[in-house]
Length: 117
Image (cartoon, rainbow, N blue to C red):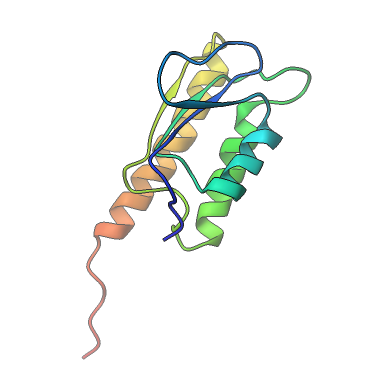
């Protein structure tokens, strides 16, 4: 497993993280670099619009792909997220994408392995 630490990540180009144990990143590239260096945190708070053409969806899609490429060993089983974006469509896209993947990942992990007879 690749999970290194219980941590919180705050992805937002403008806002300040709420009080607590957050690491703030300002772009999808910074978020990717954080995960590559530290592993996936147990909690991420997402803003959707990150300035210019950058969006949190770029990071979310990369994170899911990275987890799949590593046999589900990147995103911890205890992973939680919140979307604090003022963009309702973008917020719904992030939440829907992650909920869909995490729901599939959990159901796959819970399925018993096929026995060989």
